[in-house]
Image 1 (cartoon, rainbow, N blue to C red):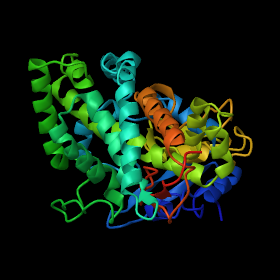
Image 2: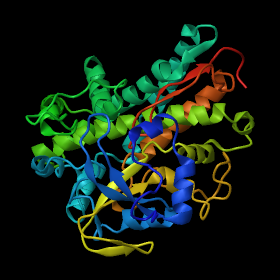
Image 3: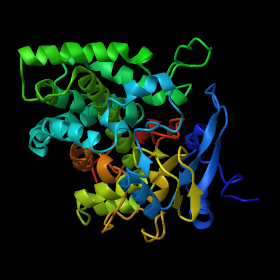
Length: 420
Protein backbone atom coordinates (compact mmCIF):
# COMPACT_ATOMS: atom_id res chain seq x y z
CA UNK A 1 0.00 0.00 0.00
CA UNK A 2 1.31 3.47 -0.91
CA UNK A 3 1.25 5.48 2.31
CA UNK A 4 1.63 8.73 0.36
CA UNK A 5 -1.72 8.39 -1.37
CA UNK A 6 -3.77 6.18 0.95
CA UNK A 7 -3.50 3.97 4.00
CA UNK A 8 -1.37 6.34 6.05
CA UNK A 9 -2.10 6.60 9.79
CA UNK A 10 -5.15 8.78 10.38
CA UNK A 11 -4.24 12.14 11.90
CA UNK A 12 -7.48 13.81 10.81
CA UNK A 13 -10.26 12.30 12.95
CA UNK A 14 -10.93 14.75 15.83
CA UNK A 15 -11.86 11.83 18.09
CA UNK A 16 -8.28 10.54 17.92
CA UNK A 17 -7.11 13.66 19.75
CA UNK A 18 -9.52 13.11 22.64
CA UNK A 19 -7.27 10.18 23.60
CA UNK A 20 -4.10 12.27 23.36
CA UNK A 21 -2.02 13.85 20.62
CA UNK A 22 -1.10 10.95 18.25
CA UNK A 23 2.68 11.36 18.46
CA UNK A 24 3.42 7.80 17.38
CA UNK A 25 1.34 8.28 14.23
CA UNK A 26 3.16 11.54 13.56
CA UNK A 27 6.52 9.78 13.99
CA UNK A 28 5.56 7.08 11.50
CA UNK A 29 4.54 9.70 8.97
CA UNK A 30 7.73 11.75 9.49
CA UNK A 31 9.88 8.66 9.03
CA UNK A 32 8.09 7.13 6.06
CA UNK A 33 5.95 9.66 4.22
CA UNK A 34 6.33 13.22 5.56
CA UNK A 35 3.74 14.52 3.09
CA UNK A 36 0.91 11.98 3.24
CA UNK A 37 -2.58 11.98 1.79
CA UNK A 38 -5.38 12.01 4.36
CA UNK A 39 -9.01 11.26 3.48
CA UNK A 40 -11.74 13.44 5.01
CA UNK A 41 -14.63 11.14 5.86
CA UNK A 42 -17.83 12.31 7.49
CA UNK A 43 -17.17 12.68 11.22
CA UNK A 44 -19.52 13.69 14.04
CA UNK A 45 -22.17 14.88 11.59
CA UNK A 46 -19.78 17.05 9.56
CA UNK A 47 -19.80 16.23 5.82
CA UNK A 48 -16.95 14.48 4.04
CA UNK A 49 -14.32 16.52 2.25
CA UNK A 50 -11.90 15.95 -0.65
CA UNK A 51 -8.86 15.08 1.48
CA UNK A 52 -5.57 16.88 2.11
CA UNK A 53 -1.80 16.50 2.37
CA UNK A 54 -0.54 16.13 5.96
CA UNK A 55 2.87 17.77 6.48
CA UNK A 56 4.65 16.45 9.56
CA UNK A 57 8.40 17.26 9.43
CA UNK A 58 9.65 20.49 11.00
CA UNK A 59 11.56 21.70 7.91
CA UNK A 60 8.56 21.15 5.64
CA UNK A 61 6.14 22.79 8.07
CA UNK A 62 8.36 25.87 8.22
CA UNK A 63 8.72 25.88 4.43
CA UNK A 64 4.95 25.86 3.94
CA UNK A 65 4.34 28.55 6.55
CA UNK A 66 6.97 30.87 5.05
CA UNK A 67 6.06 30.44 1.36
CA UNK A 68 2.77 32.29 0.92
CA UNK A 69 3.14 32.42 -2.85
CA UNK A 70 2.98 28.63 -3.12
CA UNK A 71 0.84 27.85 -0.07
CA UNK A 72 -1.99 30.34 0.25
CA UNK A 73 -4.11 31.27 3.26
CA UNK A 74 -6.49 33.23 1.03
CA UNK A 75 -7.57 30.57 -1.47
CA UNK A 76 -9.40 28.28 0.94
CA UNK A 77 -8.92 29.89 4.38
CA UNK A 78 -7.00 28.11 7.14
CA UNK A 79 -9.23 25.35 8.57
CA UNK A 80 -9.01 21.78 7.30
CA UNK A 81 -12.69 21.65 6.43
CA UNK A 82 -13.61 23.62 3.34
CA UNK A 83 -15.75 26.67 4.11
CA UNK A 84 -18.96 27.29 2.24
CA UNK A 85 -17.86 29.11 -0.95
CA UNK A 86 -20.43 31.80 -0.15
CA UNK A 87 -18.61 32.47 3.15
CA UNK A 88 -15.13 32.86 1.65
CA UNK A 89 -15.36 36.60 0.82
CA UNK A 90 -16.43 37.22 4.41
CA UNK A 91 -13.67 35.02 5.90
CA UNK A 92 -11.05 36.85 3.86
CA UNK A 93 -11.60 40.02 5.87
CA UNK A 94 -9.47 38.57 8.67
CA UNK A 95 -5.70 38.66 8.26
CA UNK A 96 -5.55 34.99 9.25
CA UNK A 97 -7.06 34.23 5.84
CA UNK A 98 -5.05 36.70 3.77
CA UNK A 99 -1.74 36.57 1.92
CA UNK A 100 0.79 39.38 1.51
CA UNK A 101 0.60 42.18 0.53
CA UNK A 102 -2.98 42.55 1.87
CA UNK A 103 -2.05 40.63 4.99
CA UNK A 104 0.91 42.92 5.62
CA UNK A 105 -1.18 46.07 5.36
CA UNK A 106 -3.68 44.81 7.91
CA UNK A 107 -1.03 43.37 10.21
CA UNK A 108 0.83 46.69 10.29
CA UNK A 109 -2.36 48.53 11.25
CA UNK A 110 -3.13 46.06 13.99
CA UNK A 111 0.45 45.88 15.27
CA UNK A 112 0.25 49.58 16.15
CA UNK A 113 -2.48 48.67 18.63
CA UNK A 114 -0.82 45.47 19.87
CA UNK A 115 2.58 46.83 20.87
CA UNK A 116 4.83 45.10 23.44
CA UNK A 117 4.73 48.29 25.53
CA UNK A 118 0.93 48.21 25.72
CA UNK A 119 1.00 44.50 26.56
CA UNK A 120 3.67 44.94 29.25
CA UNK A 121 1.60 47.67 30.89
CA UNK A 122 -0.83 44.92 31.92
CA UNK A 123 1.84 42.77 33.62
CA UNK A 124 0.86 43.89 37.13
CA UNK A 125 -2.79 43.07 36.55
CA UNK A 126 -1.89 39.68 35.09
CA UNK A 127 0.19 38.82 38.18
CA UNK A 128 -2.49 39.98 40.61
CA UNK A 129 -5.07 37.91 38.75
CA UNK A 130 -2.89 34.79 38.84
CA UNK A 131 -2.41 35.16 42.61
CA UNK A 132 -6.12 35.72 43.21
CA UNK A 133 -7.26 32.79 41.09
CA UNK A 134 -4.72 30.36 42.52
CA UNK A 135 -5.61 31.39 46.07
CA UNK A 136 -9.29 30.97 45.27
CA UNK A 137 -8.66 27.52 43.80
CA UNK A 138 -6.92 26.45 46.98
CA UNK A 139 -9.79 27.72 49.12
CA UNK A 140 -12.43 25.92 47.03
CA UNK A 141 -10.56 22.63 46.74
CA UNK A 142 -12.40 19.48 47.75
CA UNK A 143 -10.18 16.84 49.36
CA UNK A 144 -7.23 19.00 48.36
CA UNK A 145 -8.00 18.93 44.63
CA UNK A 146 -9.66 21.18 42.08
CA UNK A 147 -10.34 21.23 38.34
CA UNK A 148 -7.73 23.81 37.43
CA UNK A 149 -9.35 24.53 34.06
CA UNK A 150 -12.61 25.73 35.57
CA UNK A 151 -11.08 27.20 38.71
CA UNK A 152 -8.15 29.06 37.15
CA UNK A 153 -7.05 28.82 33.54
CA UNK A 154 -10.32 29.53 31.67
CA UNK A 155 -10.96 32.66 33.69
CA UNK A 156 -7.30 33.67 33.72
CA UNK A 157 -7.05 33.68 29.93
CA UNK A 158 -10.42 35.34 29.43
CA UNK A 159 -10.01 38.16 31.96
CA UNK A 160 -6.48 39.00 30.86
CA UNK A 161 -7.67 39.29 27.27
CA UNK A 162 -10.69 41.41 28.14
CA UNK A 163 -8.46 43.75 30.15
CA UNK A 164 -6.19 44.17 27.13
CA UNK A 165 -9.13 44.70 24.79
CA UNK A 166 -10.97 47.04 27.15
CA UNK A 167 -14.14 44.95 27.37
CA UNK A 168 -16.40 45.98 30.28
CA UNK A 169 -16.57 43.47 33.12
CA UNK A 170 -20.31 42.99 32.61
CA UNK A 171 -19.76 41.65 29.08
CA UNK A 172 -16.89 39.24 29.68
CA UNK A 173 -18.93 36.05 29.89
CA UNK A 174 -20.03 36.66 26.30
CA UNK A 175 -16.47 36.23 25.06
CA UNK A 176 -16.09 32.85 26.74
CA UNK A 177 -19.43 31.72 25.30
CA UNK A 178 -18.34 32.71 21.79
CA UNK A 179 -14.97 31.00 22.20
CA UNK A 180 -16.51 27.73 23.36
CA UNK A 181 -18.98 27.79 20.48
CA UNK A 182 -16.32 28.41 17.84
CA UNK A 183 -13.40 26.35 19.18
CA UNK A 184 -15.32 23.46 20.70
CA UNK A 185 -17.58 22.82 17.73
CA UNK A 186 -16.08 19.38 17.00
CA UNK A 187 -16.65 18.22 20.58
CA UNK A 188 -20.25 17.19 21.27
CA UNK A 189 -19.67 17.47 25.03
CA UNK A 190 -17.95 20.86 24.98
CA UNK A 191 -20.19 22.96 22.74
CA UNK A 192 -23.78 22.80 21.55
CA UNK A 193 -24.41 21.52 18.06
CA UNK A 194 -24.77 24.53 15.77
CA UNK A 195 -28.03 24.98 13.89
CA UNK A 196 -28.38 23.40 10.49
CA UNK A 197 -28.34 25.25 7.20
CA UNK A 198 -30.93 24.91 4.41
CA UNK A 199 -29.44 21.58 3.26
CA UNK A 200 -29.65 20.07 6.75
CA UNK A 201 -25.90 20.06 7.49
CA UNK A 202 -24.55 22.00 10.47
CA UNK A 203 -23.58 25.60 9.85
CA UNK A 204 -19.88 26.31 10.16
CA UNK A 205 -19.33 28.10 13.50
CA UNK A 206 -17.24 30.67 11.63
CA UNK A 207 -19.93 31.49 9.07
CA UNK A 208 -21.54 34.95 9.03
CA UNK A 209 -24.86 33.41 10.03
CA UNK A 210 -23.52 32.43 13.46
CA UNK A 211 -21.24 35.38 14.11
CA UNK A 212 -23.68 38.25 13.81
CA UNK A 213 -24.01 38.69 17.57
CA UNK A 214 -20.24 38.97 18.01
CA UNK A 215 -19.87 41.45 15.15
CA UNK A 216 -22.70 43.63 16.41
CA UNK A 217 -20.99 43.72 19.79
CA UNK A 218 -17.67 44.67 18.16
CA UNK A 219 -19.32 47.58 16.34
CA UNK A 220 -20.95 48.82 19.53
CA UNK A 221 -17.73 48.49 21.52
CA UNK A 222 -15.73 50.34 18.86
CA UNK A 223 -18.27 53.18 18.86
CA UNK A 224 -18.04 53.36 22.65
CA UNK A 225 -14.23 53.49 22.50
CA UNK A 226 -14.28 56.33 20.00
CA UNK A 227 -16.47 58.32 22.35
CA UNK A 228 -14.73 57.16 25.56
CA UNK A 229 -11.13 56.23 24.65
CA UNK A 230 -8.88 54.26 26.96
CA UNK A 231 -5.40 52.75 26.87
CA UNK A 232 -6.57 49.46 25.40
CA UNK A 233 -6.42 47.57 22.13
CA UNK A 234 -10.02 48.21 21.05
CA UNK A 235 -9.54 51.97 21.41
CA UNK A 236 -6.44 51.76 19.23
CA UNK A 237 -8.22 49.57 16.68
CA UNK A 238 -11.30 51.80 16.58
CA UNK A 239 -9.06 54.74 15.73
CA UNK A 240 -6.53 52.80 13.64
CA UNK A 241 -7.86 52.96 10.09
CA UNK A 242 -9.54 49.55 9.84
CA UNK A 243 -12.72 49.42 7.82
CA UNK A 244 -15.79 48.12 9.72
CA UNK A 245 -15.57 44.56 8.37
CA UNK A 246 -11.85 44.35 9.17
CA UNK A 247 -12.43 45.59 12.71
CA UNK A 248 -15.21 43.05 13.26
CA UNK A 249 -13.06 40.20 12.00
CA UNK A 250 -10.07 41.24 14.07
CA UNK A 251 -12.27 41.36 17.17
CA UNK A 252 -13.36 37.83 16.26
CA UNK A 253 -9.75 36.73 15.82
CA UNK A 254 -8.63 38.25 19.12
CA UNK A 255 -11.63 36.93 21.03
CA UNK A 256 -11.06 33.38 19.85
CA UNK A 257 -7.32 33.06 19.19
CA UNK A 258 -6.27 35.51 21.89
CA UNK A 259 -8.35 33.73 24.49
CA UNK A 260 -7.83 30.14 23.44
CA UNK A 261 -4.05 30.29 23.02
CA UNK A 262 -3.55 30.66 26.76
CA UNK A 263 -6.72 28.75 27.59
CA UNK A 264 -5.12 25.73 25.89
CA UNK A 265 -1.44 26.26 26.70
CA UNK A 266 -1.78 26.95 30.44
CA UNK A 267 -3.42 23.66 31.51
CA UNK A 268 -1.29 21.82 28.95
CA UNK A 269 1.84 23.14 30.60
CA UNK A 270 0.62 22.27 34.09
CA UNK A 271 -0.29 18.77 32.93
CA UNK A 272 3.20 18.30 31.50
CA UNK A 273 4.72 19.41 34.82
CA UNK A 274 2.41 17.10 36.79
CA UNK A 275 3.54 14.15 34.66
CA UNK A 276 7.23 14.92 35.23
CA UNK A 277 7.92 15.81 38.90
CA UNK A 278 11.69 15.83 38.33
CA UNK A 279 11.36 18.51 35.67
CA UNK A 280 9.14 20.58 37.95
CA UNK A 281 11.71 20.39 40.75
CA UNK A 282 14.24 22.06 38.47
CA UNK A 283 11.79 24.88 37.87
CA UNK A 284 10.75 25.14 41.52
CA UNK A 285 14.25 25.44 42.91
CA UNK A 286 15.40 27.92 40.29
CA UNK A 287 17.81 25.68 38.38
CA UNK A 288 15.76 26.32 35.24
CA UNK A 289 14.81 29.80 34.05
CA UNK A 290 11.07 30.33 33.78
CA UNK A 291 11.36 31.87 30.30
CA UNK A 292 13.18 28.78 29.01
CA UNK A 293 10.65 26.50 30.69
CA UNK A 294 7.79 28.38 29.01
CA UNK A 295 9.26 27.64 25.58
CA UNK A 296 9.64 23.95 26.32
CA UNK A 297 6.12 23.67 27.72
CA UNK A 298 4.84 25.37 24.57
CA UNK A 299 6.82 22.87 22.48
CA UNK A 300 5.31 19.83 24.19
CA UNK A 301 1.81 21.33 24.31
CA UNK A 302 1.27 23.72 21.39
CA UNK A 303 -2.12 25.43 21.67
CA UNK A 304 -2.81 24.84 17.95
CA UNK A 305 -2.36 21.38 16.44
CA UNK A 306 -2.67 22.18 12.75
CA UNK A 307 -3.27 24.86 10.14
CA UNK A 308 -4.32 24.56 6.52
CA UNK A 309 -2.99 26.21 3.38
CA UNK A 310 -4.05 25.70 -0.24
CA UNK A 311 -1.53 25.12 -3.03
CA UNK A 312 -1.66 28.11 -5.39
CA UNK A 313 0.42 26.33 -8.03
CA UNK A 314 1.54 22.80 -8.71
CA UNK A 315 4.62 22.07 -6.63
CA UNK A 316 6.75 19.35 -5.05
CA UNK A 317 7.05 19.10 -1.27
CA UNK A 318 9.37 16.51 0.30
CA UNK A 319 9.33 14.59 -2.98
CA UNK A 320 5.53 14.53 -3.21
CA UNK A 321 3.82 16.23 -6.15
CA UNK A 322 1.07 18.56 -4.93
CA UNK A 323 -1.49 19.87 -7.40
CA UNK A 324 -2.75 23.42 -7.55
CA UNK A 325 -5.87 23.61 -5.40
CA UNK A 326 -4.86 20.78 -3.08
CA UNK A 327 -5.20 21.35 0.65
CA UNK A 328 -1.89 21.27 2.53
CA UNK A 329 -2.14 20.96 6.32
CA UNK A 330 0.84 21.53 8.59
CA UNK A 331 0.92 19.73 11.94
CA UNK A 332 2.62 21.93 14.53
CA UNK A 333 2.55 19.24 17.20
CA UNK A 334 4.40 16.84 14.91
CA UNK A 335 7.00 19.43 13.88
CA UNK A 336 7.69 20.10 17.57
CA UNK A 337 8.59 16.43 18.05
CA UNK A 338 10.76 16.02 14.96
CA UNK A 339 13.92 14.13 15.93
CA UNK A 340 15.75 15.88 13.09
CA UNK A 341 15.51 19.13 15.07
CA UNK A 342 14.93 18.22 18.74
CA UNK A 343 17.11 15.75 20.64
CA UNK A 344 14.96 13.28 22.60
CA UNK A 345 11.75 15.15 21.67
CA UNK A 346 9.62 12.99 23.95
CA UNK A 347 11.55 14.19 27.00
CA UNK A 348 10.45 17.32 28.86
CA UNK A 349 13.66 19.35 29.04
CA UNK A 350 12.80 22.68 30.64
CA UNK A 351 16.30 23.95 29.96
CA UNK A 352 16.20 23.08 26.24
CA UNK A 353 18.05 25.66 24.16
CA UNK A 354 17.83 26.42 21.34
CA UNK A 355 14.15 25.56 21.04
CA UNK A 356 12.85 26.39 17.55
CA UNK A 357 9.30 25.17 18.15
CA UNK A 358 6.52 26.31 15.83
CA UNK A 359 3.81 26.59 18.46
CA UNK A 360 3.18 30.20 17.43
CA UNK A 361 3.64 29.46 13.73
CA UNK A 362 6.27 30.91 11.42
CA UNK A 363 6.48 33.21 8.43
CA UNK A 364 4.12 36.14 7.81
CA UNK A 365 1.38 34.68 10.01
CA UNK A 366 3.49 34.16 13.14
CA UNK A 367 1.24 34.81 16.13
CA UNK A 368 0.77 38.51 16.80
CA UNK A 369 -0.18 37.82 20.42
CA UNK A 370 2.81 35.60 21.26
CA UNK A 371 4.34 38.21 23.56
CA UNK A 372 1.13 38.50 25.59
CA UNK A 373 0.73 34.73 25.75
CA UNK A 374 4.29 34.26 27.00
CA UNK A 375 3.76 36.96 29.64
CA UNK A 376 0.67 35.20 30.95
CA UNK A 377 2.23 31.74 30.97
CA UNK A 378 5.43 32.91 32.65
CA UNK A 379 3.44 34.71 35.33
CA UNK A 380 1.14 31.76 36.01
CA UNK A 381 4.03 29.32 36.47
CA UNK A 382 5.90 31.78 38.72
CA UNK A 383 2.86 32.30 40.92
CA UNK A 384 2.13 28.56 41.06
CA UNK A 385 5.72 27.92 42.15
CA UNK A 386 5.44 30.57 44.88
CA UNK A 387 2.08 29.54 46.33
CA UNK A 388 1.22 25.91 45.58
CA UNK A 389 2.74 22.45 45.85
CA UNK A 390 4.13 20.63 42.83
CA UNK A 391 1.35 19.93 40.31
CA UNK A 392 -0.05 16.44 40.87
CA UNK A 393 -2.90 14.77 39.04
CA UNK A 394 -5.98 14.07 41.15
CA UNK A 395 -7.87 12.37 38.33
CA UNK A 396 -7.72 11.86 34.58
CA UNK A 397 -7.65 14.95 32.38
CA UNK A 398 -10.21 15.36 29.61
CA UNK A 399 -9.05 16.53 26.20
CA UNK A 400 -11.03 18.45 23.63
CA UNK A 401 -12.33 16.51 20.64
CA UNK A 402 -10.52 18.58 18.02
CA UNK A 403 -7.87 18.22 15.33
CA UNK A 404 -7.28 21.99 15.49
CA UNK A 405 -7.05 23.14 19.12
CA UNK A 406 -4.92 21.21 21.62
CA UNK A 407 -7.46 21.79 24.35
CA UNK A 408 -7.84 20.36 27.82
CA UNK A 409 -11.34 20.77 29.20
CA UNK A 410 -10.82 19.12 32.63
CA UNK A 411 -7.62 18.90 34.68
CA UNK A 412 -8.01 17.81 38.34
CA UNK A 413 -4.87 18.84 40.27
CA UNK A 414 -3.97 18.74 43.95
CA UNK A 415 -3.54 22.24 45.33
CA UNK A 416 -3.27 21.64 49.08
CA UNK A 417 0.09 21.50 50.85
CA UNK A 418 3.14 23.77 51.11
CA UNK A 419 4.71 25.27 47.98
CA UNK A 420 7.72 23.46 46.60
